[in-house]
Image (cartoon, rainbow, N blue to C red; front, side):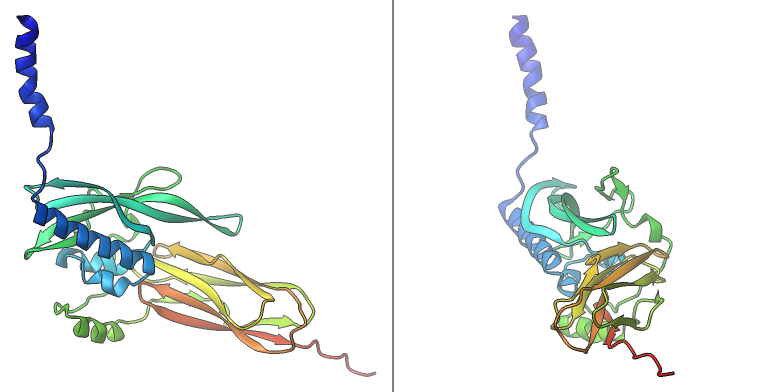
Length: 274
């Protein structure tokens, strides 16, 4: 008898522990929005991702660092507040800089969603959001939380966002070199220091504009909080190419702003005759 009594008492608890299934149309709509958002993040298409951000989180999203997703596939969805809010887990990639080299490691990301005017929108909760790092969970955007990021208009139509994006002031940065000189036949490494003066976090992506295999830049990308800096190293490995000019391109996200630094390769000047 005691066994059946205990079982009867336990049954309601087990039933209560099982979360009710969300309405099919609600779950389908959330998964469609979350998948699209992750796809845009994976592609680096932050302007399209911005259209899926809740109004109260748009300023935060605009000024925050943008880590690319590893996949648009959803790993886990947890609903709350009578299916008006949800937490979505998925895979991402974390870039670490170790001994001057950029290393990509698998990581995880958590995105928060809520219903806003009948549509699922991504949002930021400063009291709960953390990002997994190699040293453990860290608060998202804590370094720049007191800063005021750029503002965009309330009209979020694609045409309005495209027009407004052109008027957003460029990110503020200090770059210590205007050009990098190299000499034909001499292997050399030159450095460029990029200092983030923007009120929010940025991601700087480095590549070379040149049909020339002799130049290498490291790191390829780096995330910076306000007032942080990174040193990009450009190494010239001599080959049979002649004298030419190329550029180191630094792309600043999420502003999609570019800075070009000329790489000047010249012949060594002959010594003056006595």
